[in-house]
Length: 119
Image 1 (cartoon, rainbow, N blue to C red):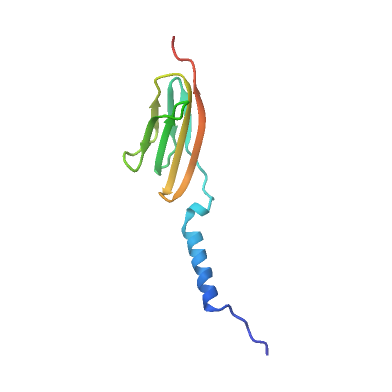
Image 2 (image 1 turned 30 degrees about the horizontal axis):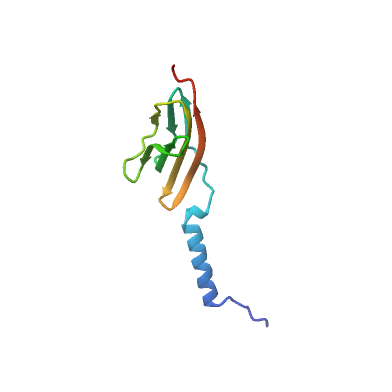
């Protein structure tokens, strides 16, 4: 009669910890789809579809100096959020949303150009 070989307890414990860590921390599982969007109209950026998530939204000028910021840590970002810019030019928008503060859901960083200002 053949003897059935089973893994030892230490191996099972290590595997269980690894699976718990991997499955319990959704930042390692990228099955989610980011639905956050932004639209540029005149000198405004309209951010929407944050889906009631924790969010950090920033807009930087062409020199990467911040010109707008909201964070759910200090002051909740509204959804939709209207950001009014004073001047035409190149800006960068960053939209980050989180399931919890350790698991990032959206991470957008893109260049936007504001054109057609009066003058």
